[in-house]
Length: 360
Ligand SMILES: NC(=O)c1ccc[n+]([C@@H]2O[C@H](COP(=O)([O-])OP(=O)(O)OC[C@H]3O[C@@H](n4cnc5c(N)ncnc54)[C@H](O)[C@@H]3O)[C@@H](O)[C@H]2O)c1
Ligand SMILES: [Zn+2]
Ligand SMILES: [Zn+2]
Image 1 (cartoon, rainbow, N blue to C red):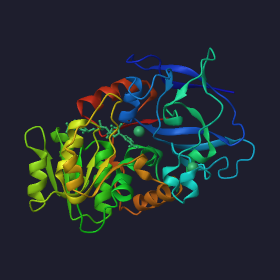
Image 2: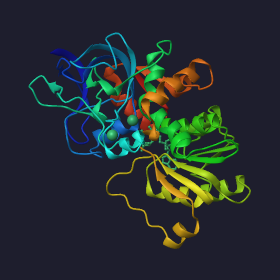
Image 3: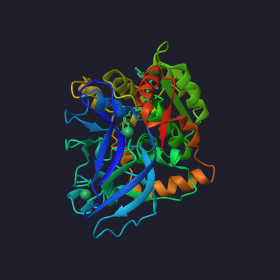
Image 4: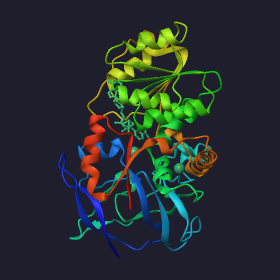
């Protein structure tokens, strides 16, 4: 058993606190990982607000890189000392999606079976089955993806969630290709990941849409060819104008709200694709004229984790980073300590950061 410090969301809406966390030694199929860095994702705030589910207390943090300290019986995919990015979709290899050769949709992804607890034995629910705002965490060994250790942890960890979700929304789910026009609504960590992904894939026009000028400035730095401030300009009209009057081939919604989803729906070209990567809350509803759903053709897709396959995508994207072709450093607005999560949530709310990253 390991006694470490971790960031816990105790009750709905309450401020997070730094608590003693007890982490068991890894059992069969599990790995104990020393966390080196973990980014603050909007989903952590969703957990704290009770927007994901009511399984409080949560151990927050899920966008992390670290080093494997020990592994349980039967683990052969990683060994102690491996430098890894943690993923929250360790594929099972046996469910109906995996058996059909589509493991990125795996319907039975793995997490550690033993629970981490508070000092009094209360079991913790780790955010997205990871829980990494903590010195050491326990995961399923398949949640550890080995990457080149020359990539520093505070940038490598970003691929563990938001940035991967964004890049993957463009290149995997949206299937963006050379010459496409792409619009991204919401230019936070995820949306700017989508912009970076669209640029990597060879998109010709890349339009960033946000209500915050600062985010639009960053979108330009990631390669957006145009930006639209949707607090003052109708984004649907603007996207149509920038694409010859037609709409974009692929529109990526990276906010998770009904009104921005509707904008994405109307801003795409005929036979175009809408990708929803923003996460809605259970109460949200969209209403669309069915004749438009039919008449516009194309596809309306959702993107879980950018439909990534960690074993395929993490090492590849880290290599592109090391070659200077994917600027992950630009996502890191600041590095902080485990004590600073609430402040990081406030900065996220005020739109001051793309990513605050806890470094341990
Ligand atoms: N699908 C997945 O696997 C996955 C993974 C990680 C995060 N997410 C989700 O993606 C979303 C974005 O996450 P993030 O970390 O980038 O958050 P973020 O807070 O950094 O970014 C959200 C952005 O949306 C902008 N925005 C807010 N309202 C808007 C509006 N009406 N029109 C245009 N822009 C608006 C904000 O200014 C901000 O720049 C969240 O819903 C998060 O839960 C999904
Ligand atoms: Zn599976
Ligand atoms: Zn996340």
